[in-house]
Amino acid sequence: MIQFTERGPHFLFVAETRGVICGYACSTRLRSRPAYDISVEATVYLDASVTGRGIGRVLYTRLLGALQETRVHRIFAAISLPNQPSIQLHEALGYRHVGTWGQVGFKFGRYWDVAWFERPLDSNSPPVEAC
Image (cartoon, rainbow, N blue to C red; front, side, top):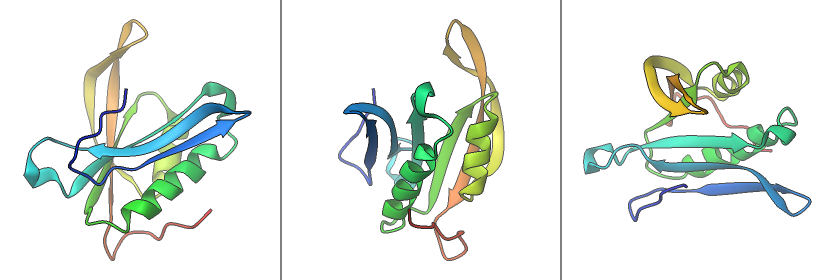
């Protein structure tokens, strides 16, 4: 479940195939305290049946474009490891690895390490190409 609050900016972009949602990209609050309102966490999710088709890049590019029109200073992304395709997508979109939390996630009956990536949104940010 994606949680949105009145503090933003929050965006949600959805992809569908044959009338069924197959993926999304969204931005949510990074932390609850007002000091962190200049940062967001970005998430991209695709159903396994549609990976490798460029849908994730299209969704993420639209999300980054929308965020560039806001007061957001930094975007963060958490990637459960291992996940080389997601790491490659984030790096291609200007993210850099800033740390890894060991066994912080639990899904599918096991613990997962989570890598954190960040991307600035300022004059030094790589440009986001329109899709």
